[in-house]
Length: 191
Image (tube, rainbow, N blue to C red; front, side):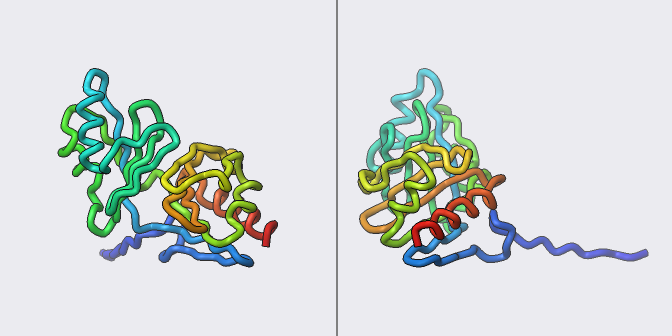
């Protein structure tokens, strides 16, 4: 009888063993795999308790279109009484379980890490590239904001984490290749 040993290897959303990074002209697109994600949705009648827990975690509660960048967590508004939390995977791999303990019955917590792909688009031509991709006015998007938009027919979030030429794009992991291709195409068009 033959025994077959199977070794499992983690793959990125783009199917590689390591995150991909491409540079076209003055722009660089980097696949980011070092984050854990979880959503927090306040339960009916427990909204204030949830908001209090969120303020304790992030320093304040992000409203519509806002993100709170508090190290090591980032939180941003994704809908009515709902937020996405991003934290370093290496120290917060079990982020959803941690948040369930923290929020108790005041919120419904859902593991989101494997549902999303994260890309960082950096360089001095990000506004021009993003104008080809979506309707978000990147030039008017201040640091600490998050916008829901459509990129290449995909529901995505665009975050401006801080000052400088960096935009973080979150899109559905199941369409990572399509999103990646769309961003690369826009980068090439403005190079």
